[in-house]
Amino acid sequence: MLPFLSDRSRPQGHPLLEVLPGQPIVHTRVAARGTWTVTARGWVLHSRIQLLDGDAVGLRDARLIGAVITTAEMLPDGTLGLVLQDGPGRPPDLSTTPRRLATVAPWRIDGPRRAMLQADEKGNLSATPPGPPVFATPETLAEFSASEPSGIEQRLLRRARDGWLHPGHVVELLASAGALEDEEFERRGPILLSRMLARGELRAGFVTDGSFHAWQLNLAETIEHIGTVWTAIGGRAPGPDTIAWFEITEVGEERLGLTGPQALPPGMSGYDSPGVVGGFR
Image (cartoon, rainbow, N blue to C red; front, side):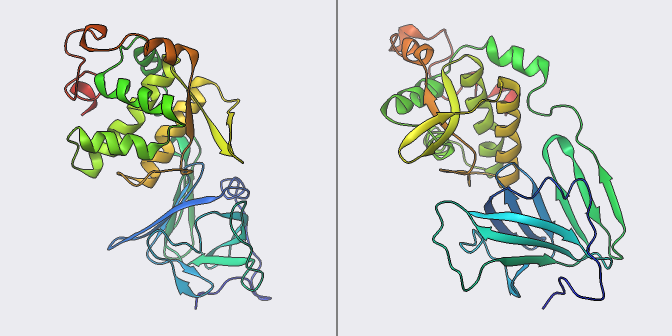
């Protein structure tokens, strides 16, 4: 069992650890290169092995998904510990909360805008603060805003007219349009949503108690969040409640007022449209 807090070792903090409390965990994945734990804001803890109260974390670990980080601390030997509580929507299990997620050094935490904190084998820290936008540069925003809807984006709008949209719907339509590799879903999914948001056809938010609540974030912040979290989760894994929900706007409804091939510019009727291939492949 990994060490966590002890009388002989005083926990240490770091500014990049201080942003983790309050963030829910939305995904875990395990591969030969280690374990990844992903938060709702796109922060990713990667290490060889992570233990939840002494037991190894698994793929899409139900014990973790939906839990909220309350404390993030590091011991002098480099051991990182996260204290977790059950979040909204999870049935409380008072016999096992609070839980402790721990990992020994080396480990690495990646955050939005290429922020990074890592500990080497001896527990020595190195850090990179957040930099400029990665997914929402001024040039990218201008390009998305000036774009024309592709065929697959029209289909996403029709899906949104029937009910709130989530990233899993994007994955489904990309798969039906011929996408195969995880890298395709990871690269193209955020672009499709970002183009529709930039044109004002969708708004992003969250759904609670059967109601949609739009975010109070600006366009750049929304697009940066979508790209960051989708990349952190990876591939075709994003689904409901992992990144955001999306609601069609009046602009989107008006866009659907024009239907059929005659409503789309040449080359925009299907998979091979500029919105999903070309420079974005």
